[in-house]
Structure formats: C-alpha cells, structure tokens
Amino acid sequence: MSIEYLGLSSINGPLIALEGVQDAFYDEIVEFVVEGTEHKIGRIVEVYEDRAVIQVFEGSENMSLKNTHTKLTGHPMEIALSPDMLGRTFNGIGQPVDDLGPIVSTLKRDVNGLPLNPVRREYPRNYIHTGISAIDGLTTLIRGQKLPIFSGNGLPHDQLAAQIVKQASLGENTDEKFAIVFAAMGVKHDVADFFRNTFEESGVADHVAMFLNLANDPVVERLITPKVALTVAEYLAFEQNMHILVILTDMTSFAEAMREVSSSKGEIPSRKGYPGYLYSELATIYERAGIVQGVNGSVTQLPILTMPNDDITHPIPDLTGYITEGQIVLDRPLHGQSIYPPINILPSLSRLMKDGIGEGYTREDHQDLANQLFSAYAKVGDARNLASVIGEDELSPIDKKYLEFGKEFEERYIGQGQNENRSMEETLDLGWELLGRLPKEELDRVDTKILEKYYKRMDEDE
Image 1 (cartoon, helix red, strand yellow):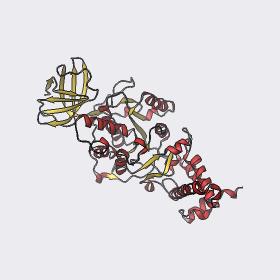
Image 2 (spheres, rainbow, N blue to C red):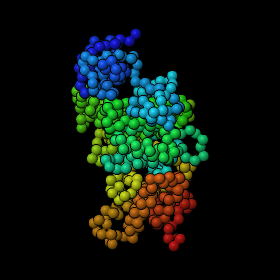
Image 3 (cartoon, rainbow, N blue to C red):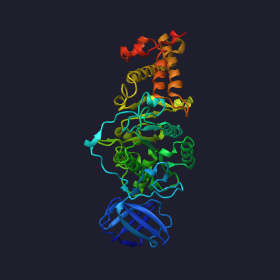
Image 4 (cartoon, one colour):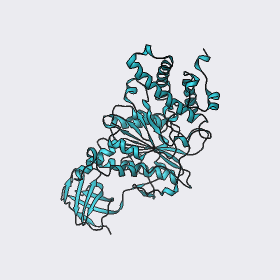
C-alpha cells in the first residue's frame, strides 16, 4: 500500500524536502499532484532518517508547501521498452513528443541500468563505418568502444554528429542489424530542429531513436536523459541483438546540470565548482558501452563534449579521457581555414583501433598507412615551425615537400563535404595518393611488402 503525503517541508529551486517519510529509498520515483490537477514526477536524491530530498523533473513552479500531494511509487525511474522506439522522438525522460502516441509495452527497465559483469565482457572487434576519412582512416571507431569527440563552442560538432548519424553503418557485406540512439542535452530549439529535419530528409529517421532535452527544459531532466537513452540502447543491443551506436551531445551540459543541482543541495564543490562525484557519474554513463558474451549485439558510444575555453585540461574532458578509449579532437585553427570536419589528428587517438582493422576487417595496409600518415603530418608541423622562423624559401627540398603534403592532407583527406560519404577503400587509397607526394625513403613506418604493393610516386605519372 502506498502512502500519500499532504504538504511539503521546504522548496529550494528544483529540490523539495519532505519530512515524516516512511520506507523511502535513494533514486525512488515520486509522484506529485499540485492543486488537484497538475501532475509532476521527481526522484529522491537524499534520505536522512524520516526526511527525503526530492528533485522535481518539471521544476517546482506552482508548487507550495500546502497545495501538493506526494506519493512514493516504490520503484526507481523506469522506461517502457519496445523495438517500436526506433523512428520515434522523445523528451529527456523518455516521454514521446512526436504526436504518435505512447509506447505500448509491458516491459519496463530501471534507467540506472545494471552493472555489467567484467568477466562477461567481450573484447571489441570490427569497426563502425562513418564515411569520414579522418575517423575511419586514423581514429577508427570499433564496435563496443567509447570514443568521445572533444569540441569547443562555435565548432561544427552538431553538423559532424548529424553526418555520422546519416552515414554510420557496419560496413559492407553484413546483414547484421544496426541502429542509432541519439540523445541531445540542453540544446536550443533551432539545433533540435536541425537534427530532426536532417534525419528525416536523409531518410535515416526510421532507425534512429531520438531523445531531446531542450535548453528551456528543467535542468534536472538533463541528468536523466543519457541514462534513459542508454537503457534503450542496452535493450536493443542485448535483447534484440542489434548493433547500437549511441551519440550523446553535449556531455558538458550534463556536467553543468550536475554542478547546478549539487550547488542547490549545498554540497562541497571540487574542481571548478563541480561535485566530487563527477568522475563516478561520468563513469556510470561511459561504462555502459561494450559487448556481452553470447549476445550478437553491441553498444558503442560517441559522446560529444564542448571544452570550456578550448581547455583540454578542464575537468570534463580530463575525466572523460581517463574513462574512455581515446578521443577525437576538433581544432579551431583548422575550422578557421574552412576545413570541415576540423579534426586535429595529432592529439586524436583510438586506443582500440588496432584490434578492429587490418586484414579480415578493413585492409591489410590500414595500420601501416595510418602510422605513416600520423608520422608525416607530425613532420609537417616541424616544417611549418621552421618556415615561420627562417622563411619558406630557405627550407630544404624535403621540408618543402612536407609543406605541400600538409596542405593537401588537410584540404583533401581531413576536409570533405558534409554529405560526402567515403568508403573505407576510398579513404585508404586517398591516403596512399597523398603519401605519393613524399619520397619513398621517407616512408619508414610501412612494412616493405606493403610499401611495394601500394606506394606510387606522384611524379611517376607526370
């Protein structure tokens, strides 16, 4: 039997205190009825003896200490699950907002998920094709991996996310099922409309489940959105045997919502005002990626975060880098040169790339080619630094070759159109074409047999 409580003890922003509570537990969902008509829900975030502190998802507007009835539901936040969620749009707490009616399902799951037994995890293999050369060729995304994109304010991470959703696939010659769960936190209305329209116009909306928490939605809702999205992803992957790519944008909005709620609870802040449990909260989200033994599906995460002041040592990217398996870094100088996507490959890294590429996965030359492109582009930086000191005319012939290579590499390999979907074959062939601008003796990161097979000097055709 559930007990209903009349009245509240105190209200502080989205937080409400209720005293005289019996048998309440942390993360329990609470239902409110305001003035007999308005319904709201919240969750318990703190319990001390008979006092409970509750976060209200819709905010505490119109609520007073006397006009509110409160009922404890006896269960944590749950979401109804069904394969029909693909092609639908939901708000931040999983309620449909596309006028297509509710999700009809008897199956419900706790959005906090269950811990994944490390012994049952399988090592990520195989890659996810994005059609973007800088990612596919140099920081390959592997199924079951968590690979964040580090961006900055004003950089085109929204366009990149939309392009990945449009183009992502499991590669050629596979009949396995693939879908995308897309969750946006704290986005403006025009950005939400951009995502909606892009997915519909490109024809991919039918295999995308979209969760939108808008900038004017309650801050508390932002803390639940990624958990709701990942619960849907886990269901589709581990119970429906699908390969799911989860895109979370923007994790900085999630962390700032956590800081705001923590501050209103009066908790002692840590670095830059964020709560001390920022690391563990991020980890509970990022670690919900992977592959489970005996299941054909996988959950792959591509979280996007904007670095405040482009500072990669800021707590959010810093802690994210500890938890995840690499990063893709967007670069403001490249963006200033109108190069899209402005991916700076030197600080970018995919730690699991080596296990999902090469013969049997992509092509035998992939790893050697990537190593050589990284090495050559690093030397481009050295040549540019030298040219800024002594002038380009004074450079040696080989340094001038590297300058030419660098310009071509940025414009043709990193840079590509927003609707350009390159196959893995095209990406690898383009890499060899660019390396053909350099003398063969400079290519010291490639196995001799592979070099003989794929290298072709550019001026041989001239």
